[in-house]
Length: 503
Image (tube, rainbow, N blue to C red; front, side, top):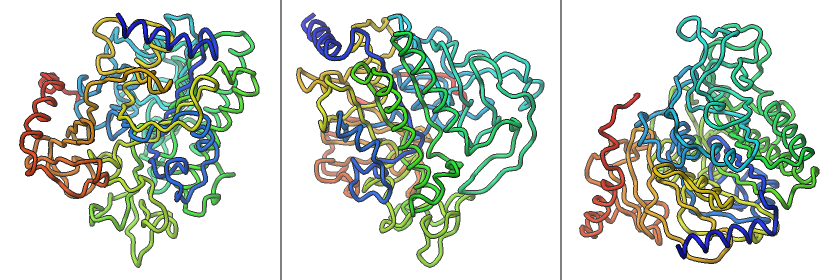
C-alpha cells in the first residue's frame, strides 16, 4: 500500500508539471549501438545533435538493456512487458511473412493507453508477425485483409512494414490493408544495401521509407494536438538496420560510410519528431523515450572476438580496410568508429555489445535535464513505467517481467526490480545482479567468437564494476555466487523453455 501511494503521488507530481494525461512517444531505433550516440560516446565519429539534445534535456540511462540481442524478441518484450522466451519464439527472429507472435488476448502497452482514453498509433517496423492475406505461400493477395497485426493489439492506427527492410514483402501496410496496387519480384542485393529477393510494391522505394514513416507520424501529432486528444505513439524505425540505404540527401554526410549516414538520418528523424511536438505547443505535455532494439550489427574488425570469416553478405577486409574506406565491409576498425562503444561483441551476442542500448527519456519540467542513471533497466520495463505514469493498473498475470523505473526518472524514492535477464540470438541467457553478470554459456551465443550453445559449460561471470569489457572471467573464483545466480536464473525461467517453440 505504501508503494502504491508513493507511485500514485509521484505520477501525479509528474503529471501536474506536464498534463493530466501526458502524451507518450516511444521511438525504437533498429540496431543502433551505444557508441553511435555522442551523448554516450563523445568520441563517436558520427554527429547526433538531436539525440544529444534529448539526453541534455532529459534522463540518460547508461545501463539499459534490450530484452534480446535481436529484433523480434525485444519488440515482443517492449509491447507486452514480458520476455519473449516465455512465448513460442525461443530463439531467432520472424520473417516478413511470419504469422502473428503475440498471443490472443495478450495485454499490450497500447491496451494500457487505450484504457485511459488515448488514441494509439504505430508507425514503422512491426516485426512481430501478422497474418498477411496470401494467394499462395509468399504471394500476397493485395485485396485481402491483414489480421492479428497492430490493430488487433491495441493500436487504433498503423502505417508501416511487416518486418525489417531486408525481409520481403516490401510493401506498406495501412491499418489492416496492404497499401500497394501491384507488386513485382525484385532480386537480392549484397551489403551495404543488403536485400533478400522478394515481392516489392511498385510504389515502394527503400530509401524513402523512413521519410514516409516520419510524415505519417508528424501528421498524426498535429491532428491529435489540434483535437486536444492525448496520444501514444510507438515509432519503431527501420534504421540503421540493413539495408543501409539512407535517403539520398544524407548519403556521404558522415564521412564514415553509409552506416554513419543512416545514423545521421535516424538522429534527424528524432529531431523532426521533437520539432513537431514543439511546434504544436505540446512540448511540456509530452514524454519522449528513445532507445534501440539491440546493439549495432557492425563488427569491430580489430577486436579479438571478431570472427575470421565475416557473414557472407559482408565484405572481406584487406590491408586494414573497413566500412569507412570500403562501404561493402560490414565493420569498422576502432580508429574509425566504435558503434558499440568499448563493449564486447555485437548484435546477436549475449555480451554487452549485443543488448546494451541507448536509452533516453525527455519530459520537460518533470524529468531533470542532464540526469545520468546508472541503474540496470530493461526495455520490458517501459510498459510498467507508463502504467505508473498514468496511474493505471496492469491486469493480473500480464507484463510479469516489467518493473516501473518511474522513481529513477523523478530522482527520488525506492527502486527495486528482479534481476534483469538478457537473451542472445540462439537462446543463451545472462542474469544481472548488482555489479555481477552471470552468463549461462561458455561463449557469445551469437555471432562473435567464441561461439557457443545455450547452457554449454563452462559458464562465465564478470564483475562489471571493474571489467565492463568482459575480458576477465572470474567464474572459478566465486563458486558460491555462480551457484546462487544459476539458481536465480532457473527460477525466473521456470518451465518456459519446455513450452512448444515456433523455431
